[in-house]
Length: 33
Image (cartoon, rainbow, N blue to C red):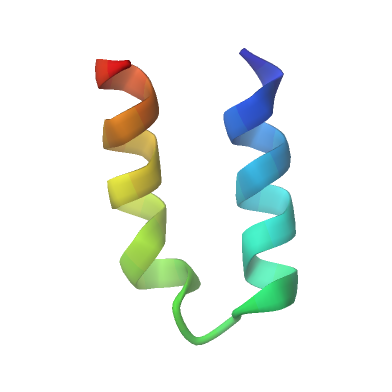
């Protein structure tokens, strides 16, 4: 359950530009899975 939180924390650090675009997708994918 913490995996998506860690991923969201890492994502903005690695790709700050893509973060806003990918965040909803990541949240949706993790919630669906």
